[in-house]
Image (tube, rainbow, N blue to C red; front, side):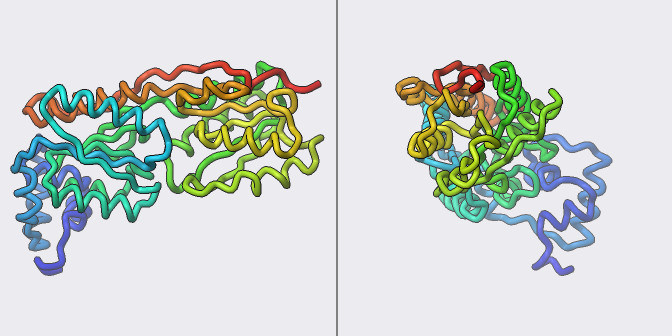
Length: 338
């Protein structure tokens, strides 16, 4: 492989380390053990890798601005996080540049490229999946520090501020079973676009099966253009076998589900109970009010920003933090129909 084709990923693969480790050594942005550094330097020499000079200059210029990348501008849960990010950033003299990706990995790459063009000092982001993610690799190659919010803790070496999504999904299952429900289902946004949805589903299934009940029915819809009606109508054609309770991977889906069930002549919660996830404020103003799992989104944004700015100030590097979630009872979840 020639020096014009070798990439930071090639070096990481050759040395048997992560892209983030190579980036820390090349850009001098963190500690790497001497033994590991020896393998990385050998891989750089063998492959003829030449670090991107533009990328390295980005990591040493200071604009006192942060990039924020979120999946959606239409979901209030992300607006809450951005509010927390903005409050902490402004208090410490930083401004924000934020954009959304519509849950698209390709858009993640494009938005990161744009933010680097504007020379942001660091990035806070929520992505589809932190493992083997091209957007994160670009940030690592450029030596620009980042921290994830909402995403699952992973072996990708990128810290995240989040909640225990698996435990939350399991608790939803226990809540519905405690209300007497035995036929359960879940309506989720695309698993390929959200590691959080996958984790909530895993916990929910585990909670149901662990109590000796049949595995719940899983319905997957698009995040951006969810056709909930198309998914639910065939299921409730036979109401004697359809789920009496549905867990939705976010509150916006739960609100859509309640509307579709109503149009089908089903009462929530008399015929079907519904529980959402996120804890958006509008859920308390609906009729029925929405039962949901609350994520401390504002605090997640604030903590992530605090950690990132501490790193930029030369203090300790960010660490993964799991913040507590809470269940908010609502009128949409009730006893199983007799």
